[in-house]
Length: 112
Image (cartoon, rainbow, N blue to C red; front, side):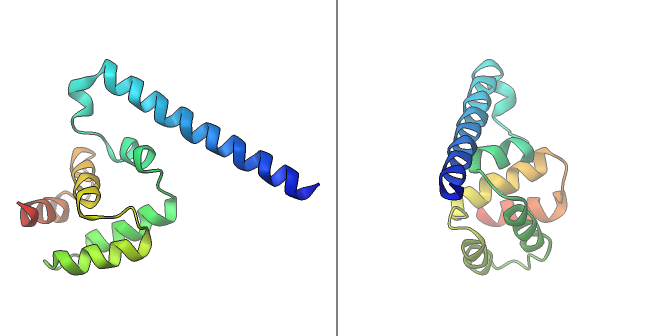
């Protein structure tokens, strides 16, 4: 019985994730110019990040010392979705949201 309830819960979670993504897509279509620079909240939904993933990535950004390779390797250990292009997108969303702007801009500049 517990296994069946667990499967139902997982199915409901997947439905919510799908609906979140669908809503974000719809909002993006309606507000195209605003979605060119998504906020960190929108980015969290797009990448389906957990609080722990975001917290750990935030620590990496705050402790960034100019080594992109090290940043990417450490980020991949947190979550395999944290590949180079995704890291850049997430860091840009921090800037859009007004969070960790100095470090985030430093990271973005280092990738240009």
